[in-house]
Structure formats: C-alpha cells, structure tokens
Length: 88
Ligand SMILES: [Zn+2]
Image 1: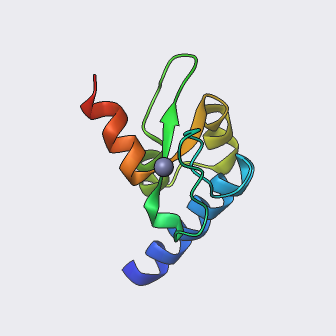
Image 2: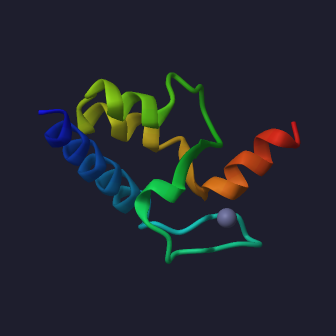
C-alpha cells in the first residue's frame, strides 16, 4: 500500500514538472534537464506561498489545487534550490 502511494506521488510530481514546462532547472546559469524527477524542487518566485509543493503532494492534494500553487513557482534543481536558500 505504501509503495503504491509513493508511485502515485511520484507520478503527481512528474505531472507538476510537466505543467511547468518539463524538468529543467530554471536557474539561468544551470538549465540541467537530465536528472530524475526527485532531483527537482519547486521554488516560489511570485505571489503568496500557501504551502510547499512537495508537502502538498505528500498530503495528497488534488492536481487542480496544486496548479494554483504551481503558477507561483519555477523549477530548480536541488542544488540551486539549496543554494538560493543558503544565500538568504
Ligand atoms: Zn540548477
């Protein structure tokens, strides 16, 4: 059962990545696109952050609801996401 849930969450993450234009780090210095989906994070750039996308996925939030949050995000690879927050 838990395995099924993980698969479902992974598919949902892929759907979110595709929704934002496919897996590709949107840091202009990077642009890495060959990594597996788990190496990408959703980074909020605009609007008010209601929740963390990964957290919403694990909570089982519907894709319709996720889209509203995704509209405020760009895709970063884990490295650049960590770097961004380390610099603040
Ligand atoms: Zn990157």
